[in-house]
Each structure stands twice: as structure tokens, then as C-alpha cells.
Image (cartoon, rainbow, N blue to C red; front, side, top):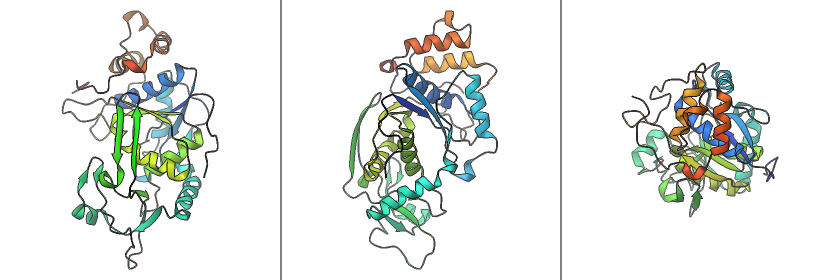
Length: 304
């Protein structure tokens, strides 16, 4: 399998929200960081809606996300990519892995895995129960990637060197769930390659997802982009701002103060004289963005 738009000569970044609700301040941080990282070099910024998992999709949320981004002054390149329309590409990727004997069927339930598995940085470490053969008496099964001996190391532009022994710290991971939904890792690497993404800019909470995604890129013969993981915003309890922790939605009628707060969070506090309009603020941000000023972590809660 190969990307449809391989090795673009221009920088190409992306923002990939899940339409499980409205954008919040944590979403804005990821959008601002990825947008400015692209625009500072005259690059492209693509938009992907990760609506792959039907139970998580809220009706109308995808359209609301687009309207909010527009209200905040974001502009994107290329067509919006919807993962719900990409099943055939994911099936082709799975077939590539199957032909290479890089995946196998697994009939283990989550409860069975939890009962036997040690806990790693990304959750239970799959113990390899079905690696040499699955239970033929069970009709439902997932597909897992073989990770024996897989070790991945890379240098993140903000977080620095990262290394993972994937077999020891994660285990063989799912690429197609038992309910027929393609897993996040597989869909993401296929879509990034198809769009020709040259650098992935996202929150530090996804740092541990990067080594298995790089492994998948290698197994599929896809290019590996650069990575930059931004600090994540937390509430007064130290919880990541998210829909699950009831982060308040962005107010599209007041973009300037929220955008200014996001820039300050990312180490770029804008001066008062550029906060008069959205255009002035974006002009200043594009001219002054410097990824070396982005902190690796921010521990001060941004809301309570």
C-alpha cells in the first residue's frame, strides 16, 4: 500500500477533531499549534473529521466544528476528509498486513485481557493469548498487529527523545475491532499518508500513541511524518480538558480573548495592541510563532 500523495514538496499539517461534541479550549490549543506550525512556513493545513466510531459521533457536531473554526479565523486547504467515508482504504491496509502475516485474529474479550494483563503506559498490555491461534469456537474476533521485537524511537520537536518497546509496553494492538470498526491507529496512519501530512502536531496526551503508529507506517510501507506534541490544558483537578471532564465549549461570538489565551498557553502571549481584532491577532501570531517557545508541559490549571 502507498500514499496517494507521497512526499509533498510543501509542508502539510492537519487538525483532526472527533465530532463527539463542540470544540473546547483544549481543542483550540491543538488547532492553533498545528495551524501556526503550518502557516509560519507558508505550508498547508488540512482538516479531518474523525467520525470513525459511530457511538461517539454526536449528530450535527461535525458541522458545528467547521462553523466554530471559521468563526475563529481558521482557513484550511483541500477538501475536509471524513473517516466515515474511508472504509475501503482501511480495508486495503488491513489486507496488506494480512498478506504479510503481520496481523492475526484474536477472540479475547476486554474482561479476559484485563484479568491477565499487566498495566502499561497506554493501558493493559496484551499478553499474546491468541498469537499462536485463536479460539475457533468464538465467532467474534478482532485483528491484532504482531509486535514481537518491535522497538520504536523518535525525537519529538517539543517533548524530545521518545522510545518504546512496543511488545513489552503495549503488546500486540488492535487494528480492526471485533465490532467491525477500524481502530484509531490504523485509520490515522492511512489518512495521514493519503493526505501527505509532513508533520503531526497534537496534544502530549497522544505521545504514547506515536510509537505504535510509526510501527504501522513501517509495516505498511508508508512515510513517517515529523511529530510535535503540545502541552495539554487541565482543570483544577489536574484532569485533561475534554468532553468527558465537562470542558466548557468555545464561544464563537468571542474568538479574540480565547485565541489570545491559547497563544499565551503555548508560550506566545500577544501584546495588548494586537487584540483589537481577529485579523490583527492572527497576523501577529503568524509573524511571531516559534515552536522553540512552546513549553513541554503546563501545570497551571486554565479553568476550575
